[in-house]
Length: 361
Ligand code: PLP
Ligand code: COI
Image (cartoon, rainbow, N blue to C red; front, side):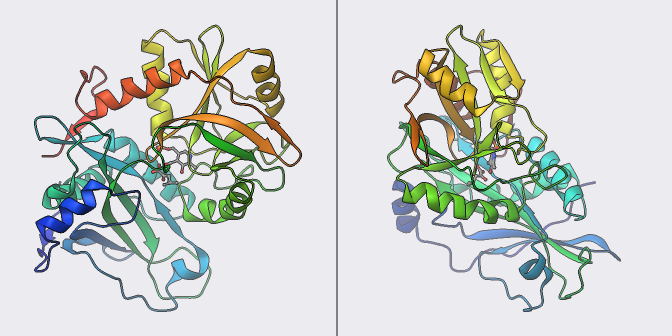
């Protein structure tokens, strides 16, 4: 059964000129569309009150649980405009499924997959003029579904009032300067996840805990931080907001195995896509020594990062306190071939043989 969504259209939407000027250079996460979606949950009534309203600030009681105990989860996905003007999302049921898994870890209620997809579709539909034209570029409408503990209560227990929302933000390249190799900072001091922790959930706390490491990365002239496993401090996990892939000289590609990392939908899609492109793909543990040695002796020829926001981004040098491994290669042929194969499906320039795309408009 689908949700009944009440719609209150904005009486003060952005002018066509303003939308056009934002879409010309949206950056990432700076601007928001005219509307937002909300549905609430209580232990007594389940999910109810689904609505689309004009985008605007929330009014929260200072005792709202999420502000104190961070019981919150989110998703990140995109809507793409195809050359014929139609609008599509990429594997939305995967984001919905991951949100269900995150909600289990954070003791939040489960939002049914079909309600999640319906909510996202409804917001994109009403704000469809905010989905950039993709001609010549790779702009899209970034979608941010999120769920938080909205009960005003200071006791430490799962919130009895929960709010799920979707907001949307036109997006260009996540990294300034478009597709260029990003330099990485290896943190030996901080970890992002431990055994039994929240590493596999998309929850705000993981990002809060990454910020100080990211500050060190920035202070050392790097774009992103690399986290190692929390137990041995030896195995590569992921970046603050992206998964990693290693390309070997014989063409096979490796991505760190999961358990404590966020299982990216881009990562999973590349496993399938690269397999189809003839690469042998492996999910396994990979140590920081293998990275250092592999680049130095030529066994590793390319490294790339991947995620919804960053798409597929070549990795340059890896630095740490007192050392550096140079970029694996400067050609990045495999990285760019995988990147192009993925974005061509997302933007409707190549046949969607996997059935990944979901039509919204
Ligand atoms: N790892 C982290 C920590 C992330 O925040 C993201 C971004 O969502 C990813 C990996 C990549 O996930 P996805 O490909 O689903 O966007
Ligand atoms: C995404 O790629 O959707 C993310 O959530 C990453 C975030 C750092 C913007």
